[in-house]
Image 1: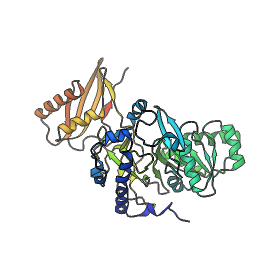
Image 2: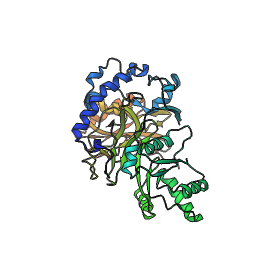
Image 3: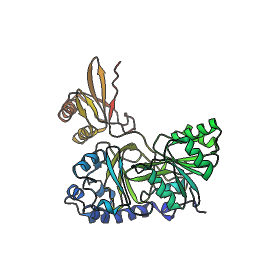
Image 4: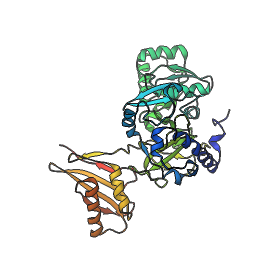
Length: 410
């Protein structure tokens, strides 16, 4: 039995990169059939977007923009050319954000991640992600069925009924949040119900610390995590090597500086931006608002795609100071106007009953004149005064944080 879902997982990275960007121009042509992308990408020649450098010049679409875009042009904000009736399922997620599911096999690209977690043809899978209006349950369901698994569409909650299903169908695999798996195991132990058939799991949607992974392992369940979203589906997944999350095939992932569309160097924490190669539902540079970093080298499992560290927090760090919002893109604009600065962090604190802003900037050439100039730029952009301090290059943590709200209200 192969350790890999298909040969795409082990191809030369340069071959993968060339294949992705050879397909991208055609996807952009499809995107331009929709009114919103036709406006956003006006003047763009799809034939010229064949590299990461060219892609990085296209505008970023922020996930936080989707509710307003869709509200102004229901249901999909003008980002999809096809009509709702051409899709397989139609969902909504908090926002609200309306999401279609393509009428194809494995539309969320989840089978690959399930395979990496040990799911195989003929397995019975207990799927506890919700099937009610949101795509979560269907993301796992479609991938498991594409592998040839039988799926119990259990949804979350109601542990007594879950036990009945488990004891009747004897599922060997679980999909759901790690929290709910722990609840099931603890409740089963307390009520002497038999859930011993479950031997592997694919978890997502909540933090999965090593301590919980080890607890599941001690109870006979090898659980692996996936990074997935309701709009994209599977973006990255854990393998038996447990050395980071391997990016999925058929998508282009960039890590950019929060508040911008500018790619960061390998290893630096930034915001995840995804371009999908789905002609029916293309996303072009969708910024998800989540932080991660690329890991050096390839996974020891043999898969050759890029690895990321997994979810490392939120890039959407907007905060209100003296009644006015300050946003990461404003901090990024300061950096653009002062290229002699490196990483920036805007610290927001309290002195007495007053909000105080301090911009901490990396630079190799600190000085009073530079501090004064940066202070003027900060005030012009944020419409608020703030102090400016400097640290040496590398003096700020590599955690993707652009705005640090450190206020306490004792």
